[in-house]
Amino acid sequence: MTRNVLTMVFLTVSLVASAAGQDKSGAANQGRKASPQGVLLAQEPPGLVPELFAPGIVSTGLHEHSSVVVTSDGHDMFFTVADGAQHVILHIPRGKNGWLKPRVASFSGRFTDDRPFLGPGGKRLYFTSKRPRSKGGAPEQDYGIWYTDRSDAGWSKPEFDPVLTAMDIATPGFAGNGNLYFCANKKGGRGREDLYVARWVNGAYAEPESLGDAINTEVMEAYLFIAADESYIIFSSFGRPEGNGLFISFRSDEGDWAKARFLGPVINQSDDERFAWVSQDGKYLFFNRQWEKHGAHAMSTLTLEDLHKRSAMPQNGRGDVYWVDAKILEQFRR
Image (cartoon, rainbow, N blue to C red):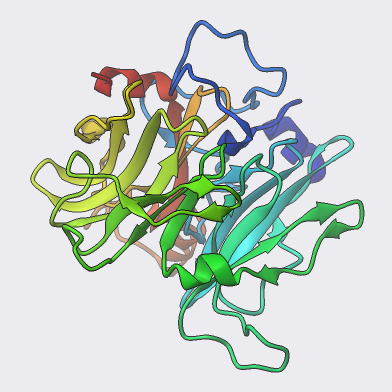
């Protein structure tokens, strides 16, 4: 894939991280003017039916194991690829003439690193990792939370975050005010994993609060995305009678969460949709889906070459990144 092709596919302007400060308009405010850093790709923008995002560049024959996240200045895109047991963070930087080729992030590739997410303001990049926590130490059995900052010299050497790691949380996300949303299996919770918020108060995290029965159930809730203004939350749940996949809950002006609603069969096609992420201007929802388009039987007898070709293409049963017009979310608002 040449630089010219990448520049053509990622046209002129960038995706912008939601954590940079989505306004109170919510998921898909149509009254706003287009952001000067809005999402414009040479790939036709999607409508109300999800489409593969950047096929051959982001969505490939590899197992994409996250959605994409983009720093608030629009200069860097990150996502995870799983290679067996090891997960690696990939990086697409933006150069003077457009987006460059995907490459293994400068801080990843040796140890298992997963699920990049952005700090408040969308500049610091957090991720989970099993890398050693001390010099010369052995890789960890459990994930810890690490972060890296970008300077003129590039992305910094990752730093271990003992505070977030000690909270024993999973799939976290920050609101614009620093409040930390996450899933955890806590004593007294409703299910195997529930969603919580730890509010950022006077420079420290307050005691975590459950998001309540409107969101949490007896089954698993995880893989969340929280709007920067906390007006809505999207998450995955598995085992509910409505189905498996992505759900959404909107928060009222009084601070109450509405009963979470299943995002329906148009988005939830594979029973394994997760890792939602929404662009700052609220126009596009991104998520990960594992789907195999070929089915159990071929139209004609397959050759070994056919199998190799299938394994190198997206929609081969491994994870891919999809995007859809976020107006689809408005039908679930109450």
